[in-house]
Structures are given as C-alpha cells and as structure tokens.
Length: 296
Image 1 (cartoon, rainbow, N blue to C red):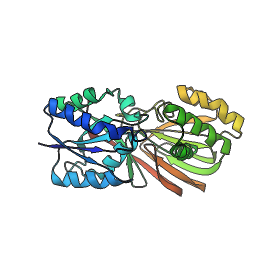
Image 2 (tube, rainbow, N blue to C red; image 1 turned 135 degrees about the horizontal axis):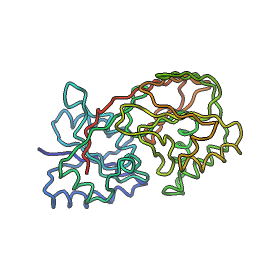
Image 3 (cartoon, rainbow, N blue to C red; image 1 turned 60 degrees about the vertical axis):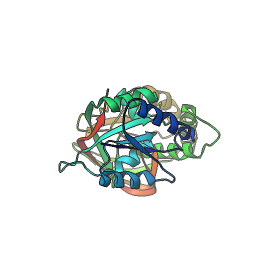
Image 4 (cartoon, one colour; image 1 turned 90 degrees about the horizontal axis):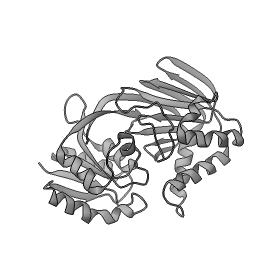
C-alpha cells in the first residue's frame, strides 16, 4: 500500500522546502512506498488529506510543524466506524515540533521515517474546539495573541521568537471577563489566559499545561488572571518550567468538556495556528484514543 506525505514547504520559515528530496531519498532507501504532495496555501493540507483518505492512501504522513499536523488531522476521514483516525505518521520539520517533543519521538529525518517504516503504533487522544480538531494545544486569551505576534515577527527565528512574542503580548495587558464550565467546576470573573493542553508543552518552550497527558482521556486546562504587566512578567519564566500553576493566580484542571463565554471577544489558537480572530463562545471536548500514530 502506498502512503502519502503532505509536506508544508513553509514550515520553519521555508526551511522545510529543502527537505523534500532528502525525505524521498530516505523513503526509497528504506523501501517505504510513498507519494509526496506539497501544500501551496493555508488550509490546503486539509483538502489534500481528505482526498487522500478517499483515494485510499495508507499511511498519511504530515511533514511540517504542529500547524501542519493540525491541518492534516482536520482533513482525515475516520478509518472505521469507531471514528479512529490513522494510521498517521509525522516527519517533524517545524520550529517547535511540540507534539513530537511531548511524545518523546525522534526528530531527525531518518529516524522519524524509520519509525513509520517499522509500523508500530500507539493511540493518543485528540481535542476539538468549535469544529477544529487539535493534537497538542489550544488557547484563548493571551496565548493566541502571542501566536499572532509570533507569525508577524519575520525578523526573528526559532524559540526566541516565541519568547519575544510573549513579551510583546504581555505589554498589551489584555483582560477578558469569562464564564467557564467544566466537568466538576465553574468560574466567573476576570481572565488573562486559558490554555487547553492535550500535551504539556507548547511554543517549544512553555509548559502551559504541565499536568497534561496525551493518552489519559482528558484535556488539561489552565486559567489565570494577572492584573498588571509586572505580575505577568513574574509568571512568564515560571510558565517555562510549569511551576506557575503553583501560584495562587493560576488554576489547573482536568476535564472531558469545557465551555467558555468571553467578553470582549478573543482569538482562538489550535496547534499554534490562529483559527479565528474574534469569538466569544468556545466549546471544547476530548476524543479519547482517537488517533493511531506511528510510534517508536
């Protein structure tokens, strides 16, 4: 059976565009039969993945960063009546590669392709918010504003770009009034951020949901309110270690569902990509063990 690699040449600021030939060379060497299609526009990977599922390609492989993975997953058609997606492979070509890091998978081309060739798989959970499936992380409030600034910062590269974007977002000192409901709790009041993790690390650097596990059947979300820029700056380095959840201003919970109403509107981020610039209602749910992914 022939697989399909969906390669995003823009990943890691066009660095991924240089990897097509080496990827195909390794696939030939390992006798892994694949075709390869490059995306040419935002959201194009969704369309390609959907058609590939219909055409019977197995496996379908995302070559890019977390945003590419997210788009491919949103295009996949369940492989059986249970709603299971996959088998799914990843060749990490992004800046942060958060999902792969959270899973502890190898990141070199040869090692990641060898994992797919070996054929071993595991099942992990997926999250969904307002119709968008995500594998690693989603957020409203401060975090998607960081994502927007990160996209705009053409002059910086790598993990440092995420940190600079975070500092810029903190300087804006945005605040929302929210009502949140989850499995066993409710919160009403001011909010600076809500970060919803399937995985613990996002942005290549920040342990925004340090209690998150990719296969526990739940989403882990953190919400908090910091009234001043100084208070936010104090929390920032602790968000890198994940220790910030021990601060009285921060709360972490595990849930299968989460509903959020905000005033004013906020952007929505999933897997590092902005899905909407302004919304006031968000409905999250988890789909346990719904992705079969190639694993070491």
